[in-house]
Image (cartoon, rainbow, N blue to C red; front, side, top):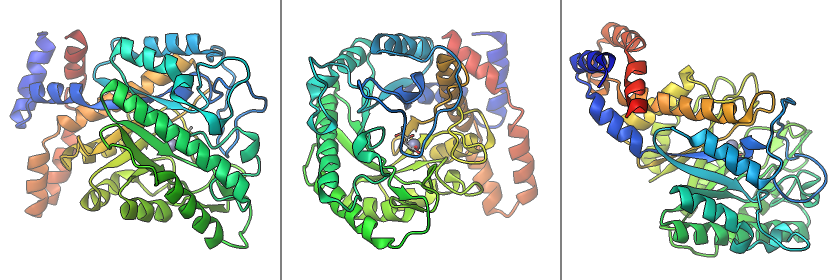
Length: 392
Ligand code: RNT
Ligand code: ZN
C-alpha cells in the first residue's frame, strides 16, 4: 500500500467513505467494449460501399484494423491492465468465419462467428451482439424494419432472428447473458407524409423478431432510440417514446445512448425514472459534441453524473453499461482505452462519494452545505485510489 493511498483512504474515511469497498465494487462491474471503434465501423464483410445509416466515423489517422487478427490484437492492447470485468460488443458485420461466398445477413449462424467465441473464452470475457441494419444494399434507402416493402422488412426480420439465435448460443457457451441490442437507422430526411405508418410497421416487425423465446440467462434484448441521423434529420421511426413504451409493454430493455437526445437533455436525469418502472436498463456511453458526433467518452460532467446515478440508485446490477463511439482521427487503441478508463474513473468516483450525507442534506433542505460538499468532492484524491487499484 502506497503512502498516497494510505492518506487518500484516511481522507475518504473522514467523509464516511470506505475506499476498500469501492475498489472491490468497481472490479465486479462489467463494461462492454464496442468492437467497432477498432476499424471505424467497417466490419469484415467482403462488401463494397461504406458506412451508412446516418452515422459517420470522421478522420483518417492510420492504424484502423483491416482484419480480425489486427482487431483482436488491438483489443488485447486495449484491455491490458484495465481493471474490472469486460465484455466485447460485436456487430453482425464483424463476421469471422466462412468459406467461399460470404453468407448474407439473413443466413448467419453461430459458426460464422466462431473466432469471437474462441477469443472471448481464452480471455474470460463475455460477449454482446448487435444485428447490423446499415451498410447493406437492402438498407440503402434508409428504412429496414419499418420499410414499406414487406420483402425488405422480412429480410431484416430474418437477420435479427439469426442474431438472437447467435447471441443465445454465446450466452450459453460463455455462461453469462449476451445482450442483443436492436438499433435501426430508419428515418426521413424531410417532413414525413406519414409518421404512424412506419412506426406501426416497426412494432409489427419487432413482435415477429421477439416471438422466438430464449432463456433470459443467455439472451437479453434491448432497443435503442435516437433523435436523428445524418440525412435523416426530420423523423426517426424508433424514437425514445416508441421504444420506452415498446420495452415496457414487451418485457425487454430500453437502451439509452447519451448521444441520442437533445443537447441539453441528459440521460443522467432519466435513469432514476426508468429504474422505478423497469427491472433493468442498458446504456451506450458516448460523447456528443454539438451533435451525436460519437467522440471518445471522457471524464466529463455528464459521464460522472450518469455513473453517480447508477451507484446512488443502488443499481449496479440493474444498469447494463456499454461504450459506443467511433473516432477515426486518433489512434484507435488510445480511443478505446481513454473511453474505457473514463468510465472506470467515473464509476470509481461515484463509488467514493458520500451519497448518504448528500441525501440527508437535501432532505433537510440544507442546500448550501449540499452544494459546498458536492464542490469539495471534486478535489478528493480519486487518482490515488485509482493508482492503488492499478498497482494491485
Ligand atoms: C447509432 C447508434 C448505434 C450505433 C452502433 C454502431 O447512432 O448509437 O448504437 O452506434 O450500432
Ligand atoms: Zn448507440
